[in-house]
Length: 465
Image (cartoon, rainbow, N blue to C red; front, side, top):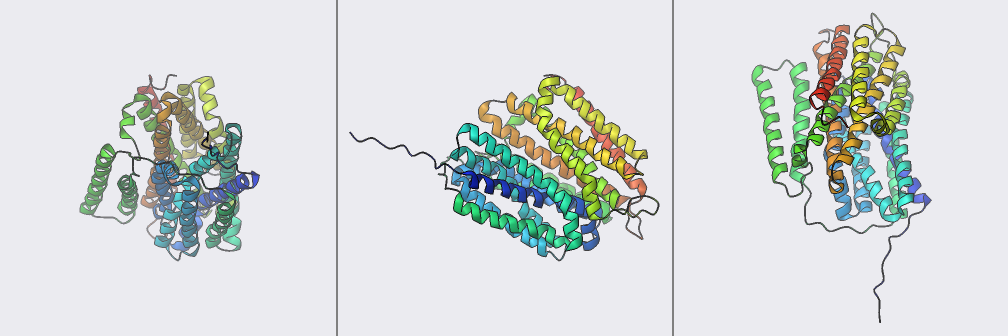
């Protein structure tokens, strides 16, 4: 009697895993080069701090809308197929940014690069399909570690590349590595079969969410920097409200929404989202203000640091953030989520209050970035871990995806607000932010961190365990 053969997935070897790791390293590098080089980009392109904040935030916005659907695309069409196509888009964005003659072209390049966020879930899909459980966990850990390491490489080497060659090369070199590694993966990685689905991809939701975020940030730039009349400000506010309303309507009616708004009805979920938004908004302000203060000329205040020096100053904070991200869940299990959130908020708020008066030495700013990264990393990772275990197994992907989107939005909003504060406090003749603008920014960041304490207090039951 004939028997039907069972087709097992093709096992991948170390070369394929290594190629995925190198791709993650190159992507992490490309993602992180902007932060230390942002003051340089502002000078080269002749843009204000708030306009400069858009350079990093456009990438974050694309990432926020791609993150929830990347895994769905990989399941539906095959992880390898989607990964290769996303890397083609990222490569186009990196080359465009490397050739950009002005801010609009650079922003378009950053928008295209933002789809790199989808590479991690797609890499996880591939290793889970082609490796046994134990080996897949090890491979996922390697990919994540190399992506984090790439962030440190970009922070450290953006300056030498920008100053030794030009800022265009800090986008071009990682992009070349991405192109080469993708070609290797195309040959080495076996195809994985797609999984048919009855639900389509929520393209309208993606477009409306990205439009809402970009309109909000663009409006913040124009409102603070261009002296818009009240009618124009009102028009921008109406546009943001209309886009937000449209997005909510679409998500509520979609068969497979990119963000399941019904999940927010669960107390554990909306508590986590609100806290994540507040924590990351405060951290986004700090992450934007410190490089700007390092770069300000040293006559009166500031340190006149070049891009290489800024990268070195920011590196300890990047390391601290990576470490705190890895232990946030462990700390929450050991000491309780509420305790971790309170400690993180107190550390961040205290650090910002100290910066209001103590920002005259480099070590003060370096220590502030380390402490802020620890506070934010512990809090957001603890919330992510708690949420992943508080919902049903089938809802884990939806819930964690919602928190990832919230985290990205918080950082983007925080940095854009910080840029607006510097624009509002800039000297009308030199365009340089006054020292008082930085003081205001640190004070506002401290208030935002303190606000998270109030949120913890009002969501006591949800954060008790």
